[in-house]
Structures are given as structure tokens and as C-alpha cells.
Image 1 (spheres, rainbow, N blue to C red):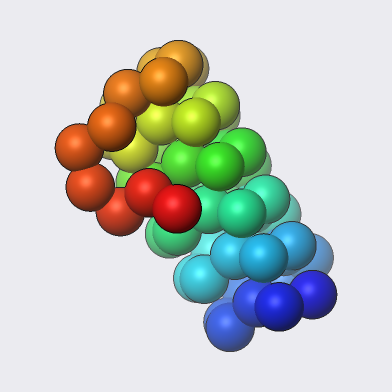
Image 2 (image 1 turned 180 degrees about the vertical axis):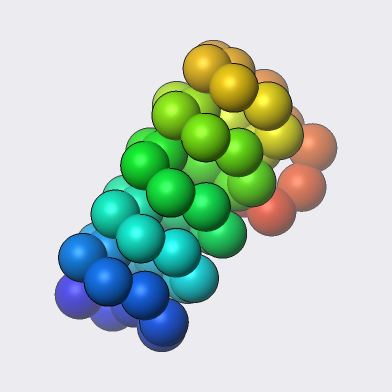
Length: 54
């Protein structure tokens, strides 16, 4: 759905199982990182903005 490259992604760019994210696996509305919600870099970050967010 509105994604570029990857498997099982919704509105994502590159990666597997990303929701509205950039490049990684299993994160929601994030940029780069694992299991982050609305974050960009790091693990389990909430509302952290630096770059690569939507």
C-alpha cells in the first residue's frame, strides 16, 4: 500500500513489516531503528525527531 520496496509494509520505504516508516524492521512511524514508535534513531523511542521521519 503506497510503499516502494519491501515485504508486508504499509506506506513504508525499504524494509520488512514497517508501518509508515523509513528503513528498518518492525517499527511504527519511525525512521531508522528497531521497535520505535514515532521515533527516528534508537530502540523504543517515543516522539524523538531528528531526521528521516514522515
